[in-house]
Image (cartoon, rainbow, N blue to C red; front, side):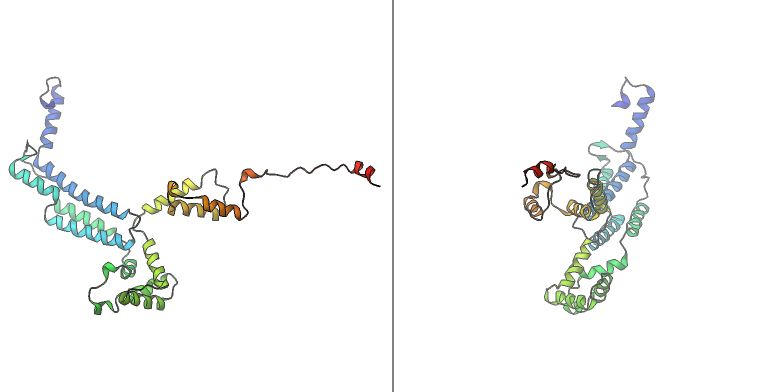
Length: 281
C-alpha cells in the first residue's frame, strides 16, 4: 500500500494513511450511501422531465412521486444504504475491514432539505389544477364521481385559450362518459401537452435558433426564418427526410435557385438603326 511504501517520504505516507482511514470509516460509507440513494432518484427524475413527450402534468406527477419516495427513504434506508448497513454490522464491506466513526451528514435534515427544494420547484398549482382533468390518470374510478369531475377547470382553461367554454365542457362530458373527443377538446389536449415542465426544450430552441440564423442566412425574412426554425425543432433528421416532393412543389410554384440568374441589370443589345435606314425602301 502507498501508506507503507518505502519510496515515499514520511509526509506522503502519512497523507495516504489518513486517506485510507477516511475511506474505510463507517461514517464515510454511510454518508456516501445516503448521497448515492438521493442522487439516483434525482437523476431518474431529471431524465424523465427532459423527455420530449413529458407534459407539465406528467412532470408534476413525477415530482410528487419522487417526493413520496424520498419521504419514505428519509424514515427507512434506501438501496445502497441497506447494503452499507449490512456491511457495517459485519465489520467488513467488500472484504475490507471497517473502522467505526460517526457520519457527518444529518440524514433527516439532509432529506428534508431535498424535499423542501423539490416542493419549491413544483409548477404553478392553479395551472396544474386546470390541466389535471385532461389527464385520465387523475380521473376518479367511480362513474358517479366522474359525472361533474373537472368541468369547472376545463371551462377555465378553454377561456384562457379563447375557446368556447360551453363547447369544451360538453365535449369533455362526452369524453368522460362515451370516450369521444370533439374538436375543441382536442385543441385543449394539444395545448396541454405543449406546456413543458423544464427549460430543456427552450434550450434546444435557442441552440436551433443560433444554428439557423447564421451569417449566411441573416438576409432571410422573418417568415422564412421562422419556418426554418420550426422544421429544425420539429422535423425528422436529415437521413429520414425526403426533400424531393418539396423541391418539385417549390419549382412548380415558380421559384428558382439563386444560381440560375445573373443579379443586376442585364445589358441591352445594340441596335444598328443607321444601317437599317439604308435598307429600308
